[in-house]
Image 1: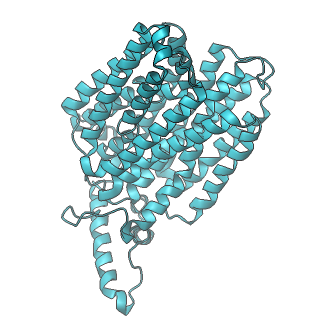
Image 2: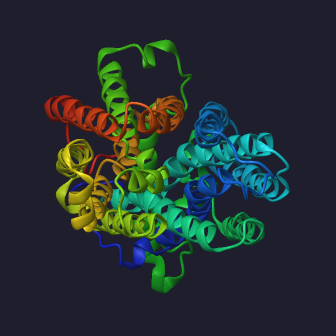
Image 3: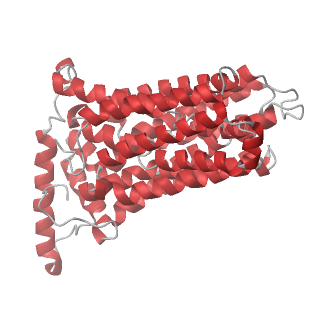
Length: 466
């Protein structure tokens, strides 16, 4: 419950959580859409690099790296924009603004005459995706009860992963011009779906709109609104619960002016330092970049199984890992799952590096399943912690007063390193080689494991109201 740590632990199947789950699943249609756009990349780059390119001529490796990485620059821009707008316009209005750049992205993919159309489209896809990573985690965290907040917040990457599989499969097997015509329907469905959702009670309290905040609180907690005779006791209990919640929110100073001292104090600087470490390790460990270039990796390892098929199998392993994270994060806690994930990912990447560095072509041909198994392991173990828990941990660590701005700064850091990783990974794979790339990624996992293992505290069950 939001107001007492002594209440019985909630289940996601309880009636109280019904609208929290429905709202979470509805808003994450947008993250599904973003995932479809991300999944479009790998098969399309292979197609765009051939003589049969839809653009008329093949794109170079340098152009391909820009097509892949510009989504990071778009996300960085969006992180800053939505961070500034979130407390001014509100969560819901910002959610409406997420859809338009994604729709234009698919239009540009369809109408592309040269690679500059793809540059613009990928930048706009980043605008939409970067906004998702700022707006939606805060929205979900603010409507969710403490006992299920980890599970609901972890759903973001589950939807992205589902979207990536859908996007990869469609891009692999559908006509280049057919896929955008189908994908553009998703942001339209999203816009229609969020119309009936309420603004979050925290934001409404921040704006001094207490009556609307109370209605919103009752809506998301599925509590009785009216004081009918047969519900009067329940309604009175609900009013007491909301008043307790209101006092907790206001005690966090959310109506006070944010100033520099809110950021430049030792506890907050430590939080930002840990979040920075977490986000840098998330990207430079290869948790995102590797799965954008899986087809190239399997070609480098000379896997006998068709590369696009291997990539789809890896995507399924990633989804299974995130499903495990959703199921376990509120039971085992954030810290143990993150550290287990980071250690397992580093071991898997070290195995791939050794395979690429030491294995002969004859050995690779004899055990062509081994590279697929290792990539599936990396995808699965990364998806139980490193990939899905960043949003949960970042938001739970930040103080309520600076949560919107702090989340924006953290996501801007993430987007910067998304750009860096998507730019350098293809250059490293085709330059120093796959083995060197994987050694680097495993080393980042080791550094992250040591720092976060020493200093990161558990945030499970933490109140977000103060």
